[in-house]
Structures are given as C-alpha cells and as structure tokens.
View 1: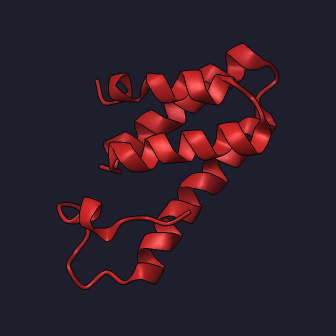
View 2: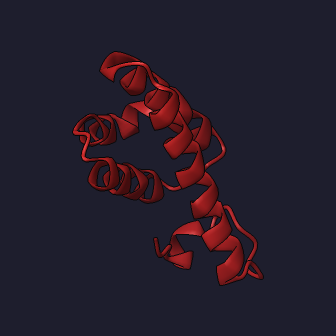
Length: 94
C-alpha cells in the first residue's frame, strides 16, 4: 500500500522518510488483520473494526489512509463488512 506523504504534512515532521510512512501504514494494516482474525462473527467484526479505526483516528491518522486500509481489507478478505465499516469512518472521529 502506497501512502502519499502530502496527506501527513500536519502530523508527521517534514523529515519523515518514505520508510517511516510505509511503516505507519503497515502497522495499521497489521492491526486490522488481527481484528479480522479475532472477530467471532460479522457483528463483532464491525464493532471491533470501528473501535480500532477510532483509536487510529484519535492518533490523527488521515481519513484517506483509514479508508484505503478498509478497502484493502475488504478486497483481501472478500468480506463486505469492511466496505460498510469504511462508510462509517467520519463517525469514528466523533
């Protein structure tokens, strides 16, 4: 997953390298994969994914990155719940 460094201009220092940005995206994806693996059913997955995204939103991860991660999870797992979770990302900031 490629991350556009321009979207991080307000949260990362200017000297952040592409490797650091990729590490941040990889951390998010690893957490979402774990959420997917640990969920017992669709309702638990939806609830847990929204909670995890809220945590990353509180850390000021860009909404575009969260949206892209949900899309990637939906395609990789073929689980449509990720696409429904993706639609709720703005509420994760509330």
